[in-house]
Length: 259
Ligand SMILES: [Zn+2]
Image 1 (cartoon, rainbow, N blue to C red):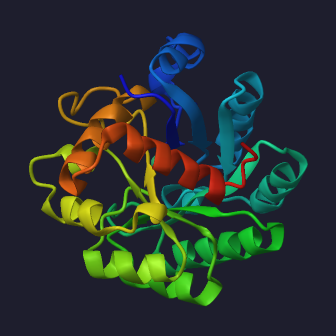
Image 2 (cartoon, rainbow, N blue to C red):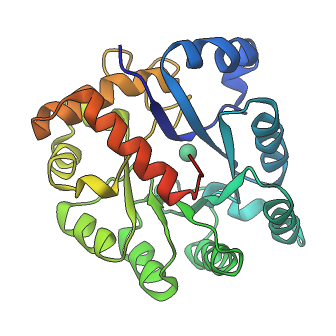
């Protein structure tokens, strides 16, 4: 069994864990080799919930921010309150989950999303924190914002090409890979998994979503990172535990964690 797993992107505040959240976080994950989790908020309310989880479980850390799918719900003052929480709580290690999502038609207009994303990128620079970026069908505008603000951070659930990966890693960004690399139709993700510089790779779940094969379609949790690590290690010709260990160190470096 793989040990020393760092899940750099999960949503344990999600209602999918309402029935057994404490069992999962106090038992299933630690017993499954998970040593660290960054739990990502999607708005102000979930920022409070995510912080609460980070304060309850030693190995859970918090990313606070407004997700692009919530851009239309932002109220005046929300971001100021999130900034305040980020400054006051040591276990808040990133601004996230933020970004652009042009996939869903019901999302806020593109200029609204770019405006919110830009303000959160500026905030991350002000606070000296990395960002966790969601980019769905918005590669061009995402790269443009990243070139402009040059944040430290990770492109989570990376869905771009090898060329885009190279531009992102040249900007110093990390690449987050999860369950998608195990999917049958994941040619592009597998190419990225093979080519990404090993010191820029992070493992993640996006739990409860994106469960890897053989659990595809089920509720995801951080222990399933083992399937992702096995797949990436296979395409790179590496030992899976060695891959996990390197990715865990990468995550600690990005999120400025002491040990
Ligand atoms: Zn997410």
